Image: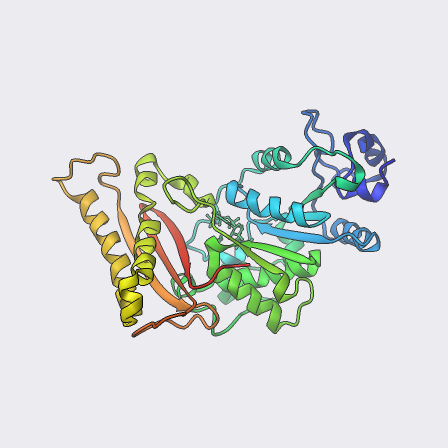
Amino acid sequence: MFSLSLVRAGIAGPSSLSSINKVLPRTFIRNASNGNGHPHIPVIRTLGQLRRWRKEAREKGLEVGVVPTMGALHEGHLNLVRTSLARHSLTVMTLFVNPMQFAPHEDLSTYPRTFERDLSLLQSILPPPISPRQMRGLVIFAPTPDVMYPLKGELQDLRNHKGVEVDVRGWADVMEGASRPQFFKGVATVCTKLFNAVEPDHAYFGQKDIQQALLLRILVKDLLLSHPSPSNLHILPTTRSSEGLALSSRNAYLTPSELYVSPVLYKALYAAKKLYESEETAEGKDITGEDLIAASTRIILDEQERILSPQTTEPKGKGVELQLDYIETFDKDTFQPIRGPIGENKQFVLAGAIWVGKTRLIDNLLVGWETS
Ligand SMILES: Nc1ncnc2c1ncn2[C@@H]1O[C@H](COP(=O)(O)OP(=O)(O)OP(=O)(O)O)[C@@H](O)[C@H]1O
Ligand SMILES: CC(C)(CO)[C@@H](O)C(=O)[O-]
Ligand code: BAL
């Protein structure tokens, strides 16, 4: 028989659903019985429910992985979940569009919210239960803003915010932090709260947001967190479309013409990485950070010129407004920009952000190292 705790954790089979229906509060088992033959995924809404679930997992000695997201799921998110499911008995996907990381002029109100679709996608990747020993469990933690910010006040205009803000000073004000000054404060604050709430043994983030993931490693180290520990905060590679575009929830904003143009950021970063890695420059050892930035920038400016040119014969993407925000080369540990000759065996990040129409896209490539 399946035990109640296994059912609660989402790792017991559908035959046990009637028993949890009797025992668990309705909010906890929302969507418990979906009738579509897929495994159910419990949706936890409150801190109390989450803490009870976590206590049981600890008492049973079950390892917990967390995948923090803002929903509007795509294959990049699903890969994070698959990895956590494969490695740990239990996985919590958090699904919370965090107001604090959006400045008042940013896209909080239009950010895609696709909860029912997200749930179906997650159901479709859960392996069918074979035997209790082989089962893997997934729950969703989808709190309201009042659960995450119990003091309730202003969350976007931080001049008027009262309450705790977590600021990873020295790492949060360059690249993404320079373009979006309150972004990392919001991310660091909400992730500290999520880590306190879930107490995960392991946490999974995507390389697509490399600065965010590396900054969070610094956060857990500097706050002496053990759940997760810095070495258990994992960064998984970026999932891309066949054209190279990094998958992103905000890609949903792009028109077909904009989608056509969008892989230019990846192509620009890739060209600079190849330039650095080419034998010619490695032997010369004198290629500079500025050279790599210039090589990437050139590709974006050329594409900008091409799509705006009345002479262009390629209709796709024609007229799309492309705007470079930044291209940067930076040290993976200090976030300091790389300037002057890079030399050999340097570990750094090539990253950039562009506006495609009204949508801001980011991407990066790692040079001389890999994430883990
Ligand atoms: N293409 C991707 N490959 C791997 N991980 C990804 C990818 N896209 C997002 N992630 C990761 O998923 C987690 C949740 O990200 P989030 O919910 O913000 O989605 P997103 O696609 O990054 O959305 P946005 O468009 O807002 O940037 C983050 O750790 C993020 O780095
Ligand atoms: C880490 C995160 C879930 C915090 O809100 C968000 O920034 C994201 O989805 O990358
Ligand atoms: N993936 C990062 C979330 C954001 O841009 O707000």
